[in-house]
Amino acid sequence: MEDKIICSINSMKKGMLDNDYTFYESGKIKHLYDKSQWNLNHEEWLTENEISENEKERLIIDCPEEFKDRIKKILYP
Image (cartoon, rainbow, N blue to C red; front, side, top):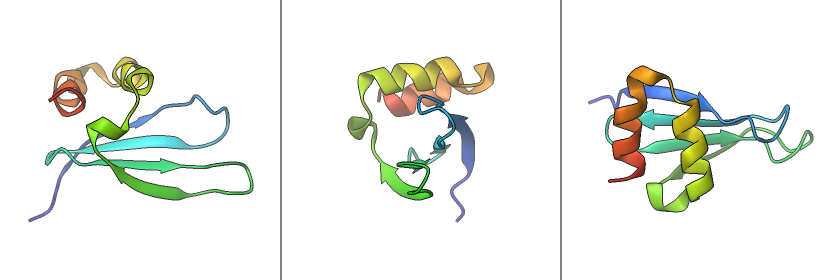
């Protein structure tokens, strides 16, 4: 069974570098990011405990309104 994507949020705190979070219905969170302009395209799977409070707040602010409740439930179970 395929794990469906709820939404992806681009958290642009690093200027031109990618910093994207994709949230799945299962509660999984995929983080795609660049460490520097010479060190691109990293991927990691996170739990809500591995995301800082500041980053959680930024993600909720940047989240499309129609997905905010679902994303809050993942970030604050």
